[in-house]
Length: 114
Image (cartoon, rainbow, N blue to C red):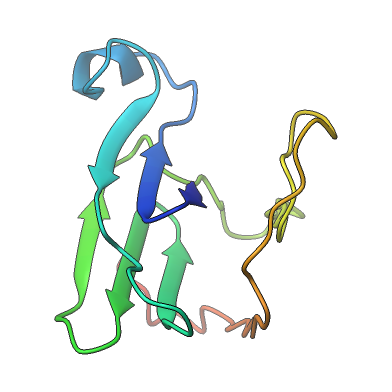
């Protein structure tokens, strides 16, 4: 998942069949235009096993669910890599604009549906 300029892009994992549900024949699952549009905008992201939800200031919460999203199996040491103002693949572009990020981690405690 990435946010660049005003656009958020959500990509799939490599499970068999991911190309069938992509919108580009590859890994792209969803594009959200104008997700952040103003200076000092707030974007709240939620990531869990098979789900991403988001809400920008003054908008309703939206989400996408798919088995082709984050695989965070219980009882394993699987994790997420989070890069803020950085490109994951290389150092050819550093981001700008992100001035603050708050990361909150929550335990499942058997309350999640997946």
